[in-house]
Image (tube, rainbow, N blue to C red):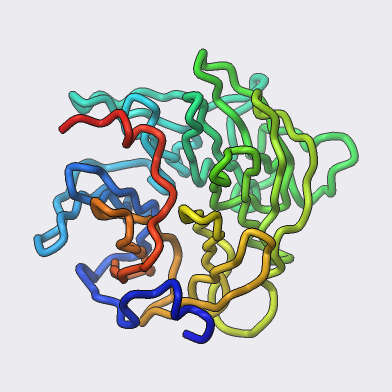
Length: 298
């Protein structure tokens, strides 16, 4: 826990549920519960701390989740090769499943911008070459196979933002001018992409190299706290980095951390999906709030 004394309020993780295959996509709802997925059986759960998780519905490989600006649940459904929206009455609608005529590879994670646009990652590695319908851009390394980050504008228009080797988790800086992208395979790093008001890339750079050390874990879930610190799963746990990329320390858990979110009414509870289980820890600094939260009325 070296370097984390100013960040962690609790040093021991509390387990709330276990027995899953591969938990992912944690998301806090201001009605005081969390959503999370068990990817491989394709199940979405709702958990109020202290209670038994409630099965909500079956998904097509449900993974990363967020809310849209109206508070509707947005879901990357990897094996369904699409991004869906679940309305308050439970109706599930496909928001995006194709770009320029071809199906997406395997949508992985999604976040919401305060302007109402959605950004999502679409890695290609786990799709057989014969099934990939997104052509690689000219000059792109052949192994990338059309892996990109996309933007869904408020009017539904889909644009490609940036090509990445294996784009996974996503987060925005507090000023929403920088998009942080976890690259999971080959070289393990966090990419920082500066974007303009329309989501067009202005510059890209390596924010942090997470390849050091032989501990299990890879860049996957990414979040930003209210001070602009970047948190990303990596070898050994959840890496915490200053806004300039300096590694402060690594939060370690009983199992390999896969993804996480800030929750609780003060956004100081770190809710972690760690393969077979879900855990919480208390933080001293709150997370960056979802833009819908400020409009929410119970």
